[in-house]
Length: 114
Image 1 (cartoon, one colour):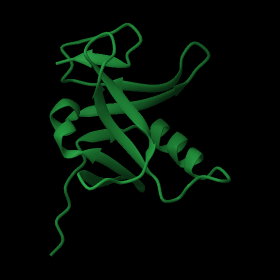
Image 2 (spheres, helix red, strand yellow):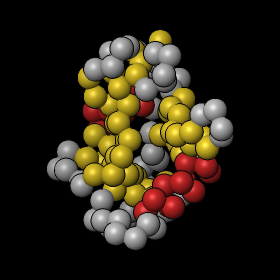
Image 3 (cartoon, one colour):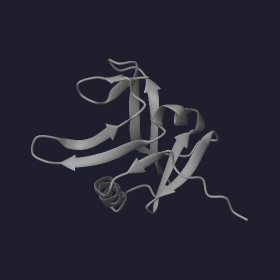
Image 4 (tube, one colour):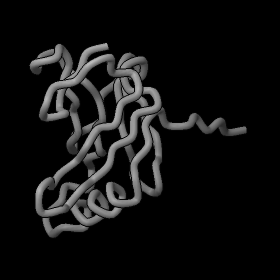
């Protein structure tokens, strides 16, 4: 019996569409996964990580709407329940992190503290 572990993060429909568009680009390295995580730094203490990367030994793999997502197991406590959105409006274009665990965040929205 196979156990399915639900992903600690959610991707909006806009995010899924944009990631699938990027994966479909000519020359995209199909051996890479979408990495979601955190790293130390940024004006609020921790910064979000979102990009394509190779799987490492301590990564967990989740499938979200057909996208293979990797994340360090230890990052789950910071990201549980977070939603990644993609906006392509005139005033704001890019990925937006909506994290219910953040006690504060910086003005640009790319770093936070817990």
